[in-house]
Length: 348
Ligand code: COA
Image 1 (spheres, rainbow, N blue to C red):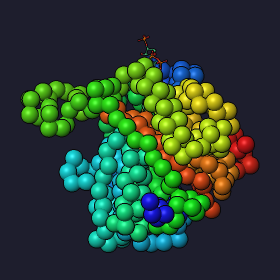
Image 2 (cartoon, rainbow, N blue to C red):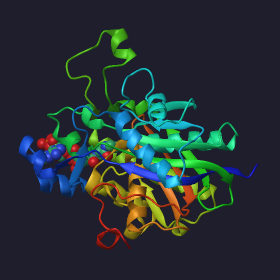
Image 3 (cartoon, rainbow, N blue to C red):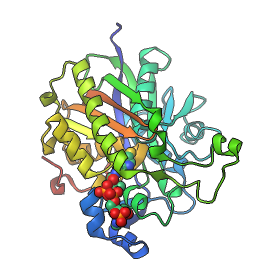
Image 4 (spheres, protein in one colour):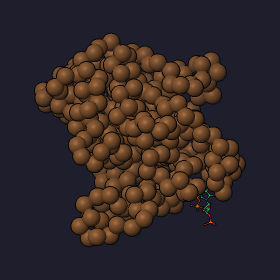
């Protein structure tokens, strides 16, 4: 096998300006800060104000990742999102155009909360195959635009945002190289996480009904699957790379629920300080979740150069997967509202 690899060269994230605390939600819905905090670990989330959509948040994160990499050009853009600006065309070409990246290949990948891992694997494979020499990989979602305003469960969990990485061609043996992936899906459980309407199936069958454009989720089954699938994927990838589980320095798992993260940590025998957590500040940001958690942890100093990282995701489809790398020298701008490194509760 050739030693060519995709290497992490830049990292950035962005959160929209409208902050919604648990108390704000409790003023609108039959819920409490205590319920949301104890059941999910989430204390606040950010949502787009009227007028902003997924392309806007994707561009902000993409621009910050390009600045972090010290470049203004890449050969490929892959956007992970399940809330594209339009059902057709993909949002990625517009993002590439507005970022001034020229006529590069640009397309969307839809794997809900696993989207970033799938997009990373796609871009990494294209770099390894010589189809591109560099890539901007963005995970961006604005789930606030597809939630039922009266649904206390989903509104407590989801927030909007975007995270991005710049990859460049390099060698498998240098720090920052994407070392391997584990990807999987199970379509038999597609109905656990779904937006039932708005697609070809409902149109073709004439099933359209009021409210079918809203996101729905079967929380308990999703919870169980998330724990099992993220654990098994992480385990499989660690085995493939010959990484003893105890050699993993940080697990950057999809930020769904603090109880899910703790359960995955327990399954893998990883102590709490190895689990990256920022869901208390941002909620579940879907495809943006993993790069935003990574960016926050790098900013606070919880992740440092040389750390062995396992990124793992789980989401609708069902889909799940993991990616591995040793963190290189990459700096990142703080996300809005990020704690200063010394104040962070996550700096270990
Ligand atoms: N405030 C108050 N009560 C709420 C609530 C809220 N925000 N959301 C749900 N409830 C209620 C439910 O209606 C239910 O009431 P009932 O017993 O009268 O029917 C009760 O709390 C318990 O619901 P349940 O679903 O059993 O609670 P849970 O402990 O499983 O927690 C989730 C619910 C959604 C937080 C949890 O299942 C979860 O996190 N699942 C995974 C979700 C996820 O990560 N999705 C994205 C994955 S990619």
